[in-house]
Image 1 (cartoon, one colour):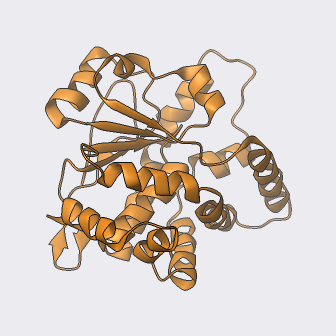
Image 2: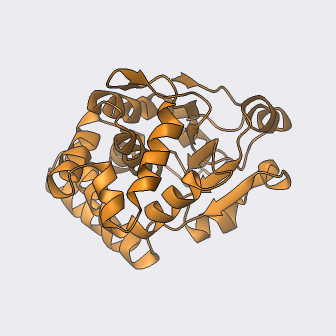
Length: 251
């Protein structure tokens, strides 16, 4: 598993080399990232020519895509699959709930983890659609991204890794690595906007990638569904497709 250093995106990594029992995940199959609209021509060349990315799974909300677009990558032959994880009404409700929890003194890592647990339900249609297109013809190498590459992306990636049998501690550690790259992403968001300030709540929810948040998510995933594979099968994914995904990621 390694960082992919790009000029126009910062939280980009290949999910190869993760332990899955006695095996390792294959490089060049599954990648994750923050938003890609600021990629340079050289960045695009790295993703399309050096790595050979075939599909982008864009989990941003419609208004995020409208504001930022696809950037230079949109002019390539890479396939884009655009999926909305949370609708606007739920987005507003969740933001209010987070603010209330923060004001009451609830730990940010717990609030975030509880939010991810809810995403397993709210985002199920998007996650199932993503899984289906990834295991379909020409679905990989696939790069999954949202705005900062931590929350929506983090939950879907955790589902995919757990389904393939990646060790729990590896899934948690991969999630936490996003915290290493939040500073330049936040700087990009606030650049040139004197009215934007990084307050305590914003920092707690945007910049933090505490292992505890992903641990809460995985605990719930296994307690309720029995794991990622059972989650996908409970939502109509054939067992053969689950096996196909394991074979693709583990070889």
